[in-house]
Image (cartoon, rainbow, N blue to C red; front, side, top):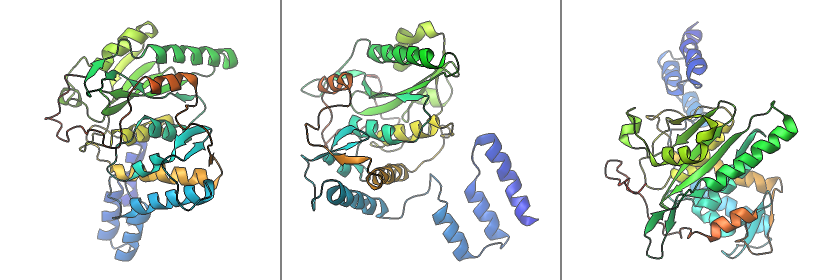
Length: 338
């Protein structure tokens, strides 16, 4: 009976909000002495929350294991070099990306595209390579790109027509695309033909947005330019906020994976541990090694999986490992250039 009293409210949370409060369950189990301290600790480790910190050093250990597997099992050598490359689901990537999976490292366009590609998702979910909103000059100065979403809008139109030709009106796709702001911040844009809405997910949203006050954002204006004819409602969707200067990329991947499968991502105040998000990606890449979805690539690793993406990457200056970070204080961040 005590267990039912504990689980009852949590079942309501699961139905209404998509997830229970596991911490409350653990505290109640301990208070009612239904489990021992050892059993409780095992539960906390086995069913950790997205907000729980990772055990110290566990991510680095996992990354080292991934690098070892890629070197020995895919490339057949003791240790790969940065000039080595592999293919994952036929997407060529340079092996130097695996070092960027360590905690606190900024993920670039290539890693985000790869992570979205290998994630589990329904067939009606489509995604594209990130779209830069700004051009970066030789001195790291930026200027807005004119109509940056135009090419992606045309691609969506082609995919929509293909789906209509094959499935008629029975399948309505959902399209996701990362947006690259000033070459130092990623957000996620969703065009949803199923719900007839367009949503923008920003892990460093302005305070006016998180507080529910109306603000016409730059992305809202760009969406109006390219998608006004659809008549879809636009919103700055509630998105868990980051407090660091590096985790925007992995948050884009995490949000995409869950939204693609109809899972909640949490609201503005939700606290998430980015190290756990990266661990999911590392485990996914190790699964690619195990299932032979990753193979050796013998040509130019800078080539993309499509001509349009290749042109996109050559047209911009992607960030080196010493990528500038956004300020961690949300109040101190200058967003005027966005």
